[in-house]
Image (cartoon, protein in one colour):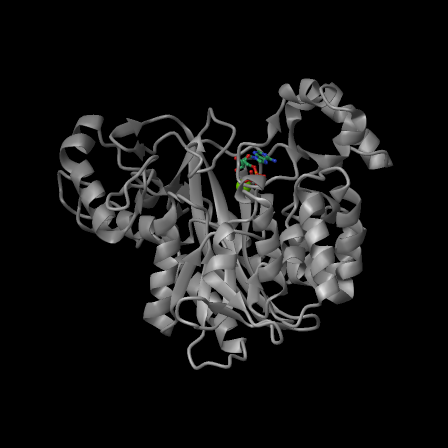
Length: 483
Ligand code: ADP
Ligand code: MG
């Protein structure tokens, strides 16, 4: 079947006949990123693969099929009726990670004192999987509840690969399409905008056209990925956006002291939804003011994506706790749905004094080659792999081990035939691909108002590197063909 093959073009052909098409399509269509130390006026082609990567159809379909169940699960964890479980667990592990999880938790406690006038919350999620090579089963790497990225560029890379295919570039001798079928294009750049628009529509604004705020990192290089969603929000829904950093909240916005409604300072426009593309890692909080500003947003009347509890529901520790079937049953009573979710889990262990924790400690020290050790952090570059685990643990006081979880390694099949393009360089190393499925869910304490799958992302990295963050410099954006 032709669609299983990858075009086998030499570096020479790629350089002479394809690269200019790749770069120019990318620059024309916004498949771009800023370079380090960039100037605002010039960007470069994002790190990408030249071809789509084959993914088993059954794995892809299962990942899509389980997304709404995951959206619902994380909404339920976060809803106040079940909030006691989440609060109880977070309160416990916040002790072990005082510098970040602990601070987010304290902020949440403060926000509770002020009270939440806004009951609606928006989840903009991404569930990440690797396809285990043994049975082509999708296994979850992590569930992200804050600052999910690459929804914009994922759509673009699918479009680029389709362009290269249809324009005959993948078969330069014949000039015909190499893949007979359409290469699937993720709708994420539109579907994430749709999710934001739904939240705006549910918000009871005092003004006719309330807007959406993106809270962003200063000097963000992956800004075009975010912009694509903003442009779609304006184009498809007529909704304007503003952008500011966490440090700028107190200077760029204003909160009405009675109603807690949030307004954009310059124009007085009402902000209906706050989307966090920042505030997920300690380095996002530059000063004490940043923490205060996060609280200001939390207690404002704007719908948060996410609120603090939902952010905390996305910690690795909660992911580990959910692998216990009894715990999962609390939130997913329906058996089929629960089994679908359970089938995506690999074994995860706490490193505390529970019986499972003791087993985890033993495995971490005696059999580390099958595991990855994860702290309560997001954004890449924090994990400890295999043989490095025992030494890393021994450096810590055993009490501190509770801040980590131990996770079985998933073993995907490397793909040998793709080519990674980073700047001027071509790489032909075997790659591993991580499939992320986006989801949007709008909920309040008792009800889910909207729950949709919002497209996908394929990120590929060299088999030789343990981590796959694109912005962090380890990976690239890919698209997929199904087989
Ligand atoms: P982060 O919050 O930093 O993104 P992740 O849990 O996604 O943390 O881990 C980062 C990367 O480490 C993943 O993208 C994946 O490449 C690798 N990784 C994480 N967990 C596993 C696992 N269980 N098996 C194999 N690789 C993993
Ligand atoms: Mg990740």
